[in-house]
Image 1 (cartoon, helix red, strand yellow):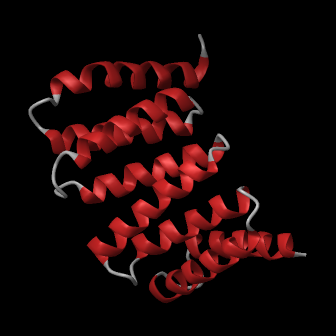
Image 2 (image 1 turned 135 degrees about the vertical axis):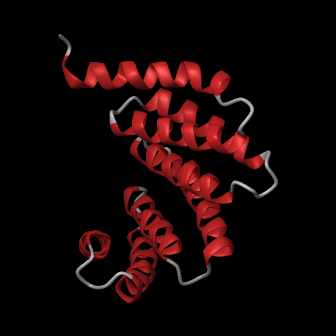
Length: 171
C-alpha cells in the first residue's frame, strides 16, 4: 500500500532521523550521508527535506577546514539544483559559484568536476532569464566535456542540448 514513493520516503526519513546520532563520531561519513539524503529527497521532490539535509551537510563540511571540500562541492551543487528548481536563482547562482571555485581548486580548471558545475550554472542562467550568460557558461562546459569525456558522453550531449536551448532563447 502506498507505492514505491512512500517506501522510499520512509527509508529516507528513517535514515535522516538516525544518521546524526549513529554517525556523530565520524563527520566525514555524516557529511556524506546528509548529502546523499539531501540529493535523494530532491529526487523524490521533497524540497524542504532536501534543503534541510543539504544545508546541514554544507555547514558540517565548512566546519572541517577544507577536509570535506569534495563533499561540500557536491552538496552545494545539489543545493544549486534545488534552489534553481524552486525559483531562487540568486541563491542558486551563489551556491553554484562556490561549488565551481571548490572544484577548480581541488581538481583544476580543466576537470570534469568544473565542467559539471559550469553546465549547472548555465542552467541557472537560462532559468533566471540570462541566455547570454547561459551560452557563455555552457560553451565553456561543453569544451571541457568534449575534451575530457568525449563527444558521445551522456553529460556532453546533455550540455549540447541545454546550449541549443540557450541559443534559441537569444532569438
